Every structure is written in C-alpha cells, then in structure tokens.
Length: 226
Image 1 (cartoon, rainbow, N blue to C red):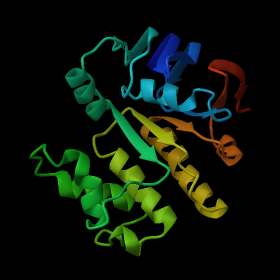
Image 2 (image 1 turned 60 degrees about the vertical axis):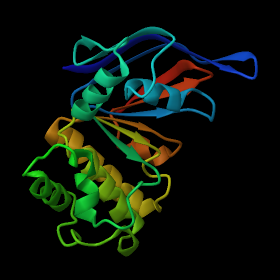
Image 3 (image 1 turned 135 degrees about the vertical axis):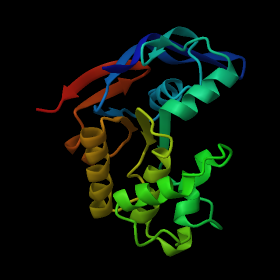
Image 4 (image 1 turned 60 degrees about the horizontal axis):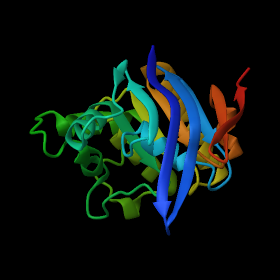
C-alpha cells in the first residue's frame, strides 16, 4: 500500500529579498514496510523534502497524499493531529529530556492523551528495542546507541505508519550505527512501518530498499537494492 505519494513538489523561500527554490518539481512515493534513504549534498533539498513529507511544512506547488488522502492544504490544527497519529520522528541528536527516565521520555508524545496504558506501552517498546533493563535510566546513564533506541521507541509510541529519520546514525560510531540500522530494518520488515532516512552516511544504503539522490532540488539517480 502506498503511504506517501508526493507529486511535482516545489518549495520556494524568500530570503534577503531573493527567492530560493529548494525543491524543483520532486516526485516521491513510499510503500508500507519500505525503508528508503534520501541522500545528497548540503543544500540539495533533503531536509525540506523531509519536512514536507512529515507535514511540518507545505509545498509552494504540488500535491501530497498520505494514506490516500490529499493533505496538501490542511490547516495547522488538522496537520498536527494527523502527524501525531501517523508519523514518528527520529533525530540525530536524540532530543531526550535529561531529567526523565528512558520510559518517561518514550511516553512524551502521549502525555496529554489520558491513556492509562501509556506507561505499559512505553515499557513494551523499550523492551522490544533491547532496553528492557534500562527503563529507569536517565539519558546521562545511557550510551549514544541506547539514546537512539529510546528515540526510536518514542517514535513508535503512537503506532505510526511512517517513521522519518534525520541523520539517525550521524552521532554514532560504526558498530552502534549498524545496530540502529538493524533495528530500523526489523521495524520495516516485521511491523510494516515505512521508514525514510535523510543521511550523508553511505552505511545506511547497505540496509535500505532503495536510495533517492537529490541534487540541487531535483531527483537524480535512484538506486534500488538488489
């Protein structure tokens, strides 16, 4: 099933009296359970595309469909609600709150839901990513790879159909990066969650189903994993 279908995306910014065109007619689609990387040099439009796919930004031109629904022109409130239900985010620098335990950090996206199962769900997710013995540890008691696993668990707390990751291995050593990519691959394969990783790390391409290259706001060559 196609979870994201974006067509002819154009994004322009006004800066310093000039117009910058970050995306120049991008087409991008994503299937359930697919793991895709987006690569390209700085300024190629990777983060802009990720923000549009994550409903954090709107295109200047073009159309975005999410699970078959046109979401291009939704208002901020509807976009926020849909993003919370559908999309999980993982970032390079983890963004964990230092005074909270691993389990409490995972619960954050559900804090205002009055969900009596929130804590149990957080513990379940942490156990699933191999941190069942670190539930009560604060971020300063965790390694970089463990912090990223907490961030992955947090991204799954609302049962998203899509996880968007921005440089997920950028702060990790090689071995830890492989462990995190193994986890992403497992989530995509076993839980049918679609994953998009924006990255400069060639290691990521050993794990993905295909790689999309962006160059100056255009889609360049695309590599499909054999």
